[in-house]
Length: 419
Ligand code: C2O
Ligand code: CU
Image (tube, rainbow, N blue to C red; front, side, top):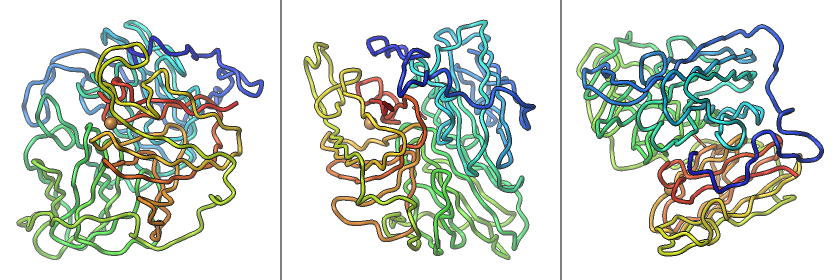
């Protein structure tokens, strides 16, 4: 964040438990299984569907190249900044990489200036659907094209659907309107949907029942067939599974855009009912005991107009303060952390915690009864309260912010830090 200026400078200097952040890198040695060079440019480019956009590209296109890695692969990505004036980074959204690989300008590295480069290396430990994006002046650079999809594990013929709005034009994989992909009848299909926009997208398949098989790169336990829509938070991902019908086609809907799968006529539109992950699927062990929490944090999202922490404006707040005046949430490695996130700000906020996955325990006091609902990005509606839990198992300094990215620059951002 260029607007990070007032915050504590932590790149490489922060110490916690005697370890320097510069020690918290991915494997520096060893031959990578996947090696990619991504060159970032400011340029005019043409969407796959023909519209002209003035923005940013990676290797000449937006979205940038799809990166596929096998589970356990060593991934090496070299970011080269050819012409992004404010500098750029790459953040691996949802992949719990070592802290120094997290790509947050002003926290884990300096933004890569024009003419510079930066090498990211990490083990692709956890299969799932993820994405990458610049984390420097994110509200502009992501909006204008500096992002792409990264998938760990899974089959090569999985369908990818990255939803993004360029200059008011909603797209799937860089195409406006309706597009078609031919898929054989009877085939079992996994569709990986990524919301790279700033607000929630109601999505889902029509034409057959489908299952919600993974959310934010974590499998759903005991998914049941549904025809309801899926509310996909900004920054979040969902994997949908369906069997291609013998006749007709499936259709992935995402507001004004759609992706038709198969040869036939695509039927239907999304119903008003939505999948609720609080009750969807069947329970399974969490791997942590929230009743034995080592830390409990309260996190109240609000809105404040006028002077706040000495600065005039209209701010989103956490516990009454705007970034960078929000106290950090401090943890010790190994802690079980329970966080209560309340929202009385008048708007929904897709809250994203870097470097960790948390499990939803309850919403508005109602306990979760479905599959363990693991998230890295959680839509917290106005007047809602969520209780989430996670294990502090990834030392470093981590952003926790709203993924409606203008909100993050308007104060809705804090850190989780290890002492
Ligand atoms: Cu997807 Cu801090 O970001
Ligand atoms: Cu927000």
